[in-house]
Image (cartoon, rainbow, N blue to C red; front, top):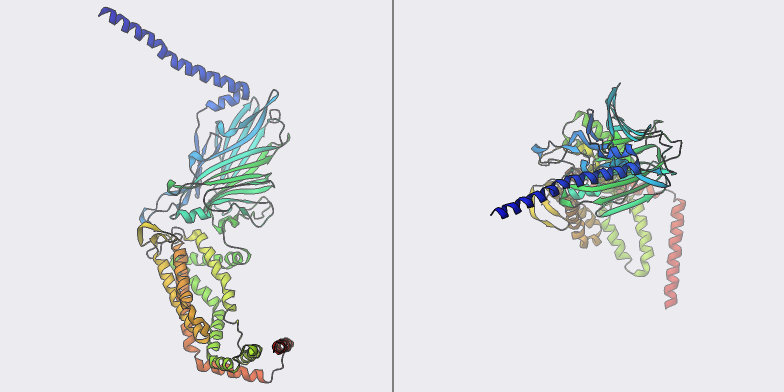
Length: 606
């Protein structure tokens, strides 16, 4: 027993030095790594690797920005006036623009080390916090990274306290290179590497994903460029100078603006899984021109809503707009013009005096209908005239039944239309003119942040779909819920389509076989398409259809067939002694020549 005890004691004694040596080995490895860093990067940078990171916060009435001294980058941005989607009574979580852990911004450059060039990325180093200083209407955070004795980098962030649309969500961001030229390797460009991962802040992942992308602007351009939206991964390298790059979400954006432009931009996004709580991960590598005389880079960072009244007020040093408002997808030149100069001003004016956005949408719908009422009236009148002269059209069909009389029948038809004052395209042209307005509404409502979080009736967010039933399964092209506004909109479309079909079929017998397509097919397609769209848009189209049905019913009541007959007679009297125009004479001559050519062809066959 004594021998066993002695052996166990010897084993314990032998094990103790080995255990005690493990921390010594780790310490030796750490020291060796620090020595290698000091040899490669210098003692100052090596010390910055081991420094403990801190968090610094600045805020104004619109946003709170948290900075990390690791990389001296913006760590977290919280918007004070906007909340993440949740059911109506639970919506109290503030919008955070991107996940702190995945957010980095690092300056990449090369330093000389003997005959070698050593790459440096500032996101790997902890800056020294020099504190926040306050001035007249602003606060400034300064962070410093010592690269060598008397050589260092300064990062300065300025947040403004004054209440102004151009400054509410904008930070100035300056990088200063102090005595760095003696350390820098021969290079013409420094890289600014920016990465961020966005949270899902809206109700519908697919809708939010469709609007989330990377956008950028070329200097002095009134338009912007964007990566195509969708799932998967997109990447693009832009070799030309770029004024700004934005990580654009559905209703919010983060844009990095360079006063003297970036020399190039390599941008990319990767789509996150639907159930991850995120939408996309963004990456941008931006070129900053460099030479030995470069001492400072002046930039700005926009972190805020995609709101036209805010973005359109962000300007450059000369006071010129930099097209940030183009981040809002309002449509092309005509549709965009309608939205920017008509719809948005009216919407903003009404919202100053009316608290219910459902009522604002109704008033906007009425105003649009009043604007296009003359077109609606002319379209109805043209269709009604075609219905009234149908017996005369049938008589001409009976008079010219043969194929070889087609020219004569067409000429007689044109003469009949002329006497009745009918343009054969009169029912279509007004509808075509209305299309830009309808498309403008289609682009405006899903992009309007003003509707975000606004409830109306059973919809708790007019910028998202409304759901009265959540299905336990998903229907292809339809979704996993039932939108009541979409159902009502499609029911109203069926009613309006049936009303229009009755008007058209009575004057054009060939339309009788198209009843299903005209009355039911389009509303069914729209139901599948709009079930996941913004409830505000479905509500607008619902009211638009109902008001149109009311207008058409009123016109039909006050403009009956007797009045239309009277119009046709008056027009026929005017046309009786009216001299034919040169166009009419040329048209009649062309018809005569075609008729003669057809007659000669038929004669040759005999």
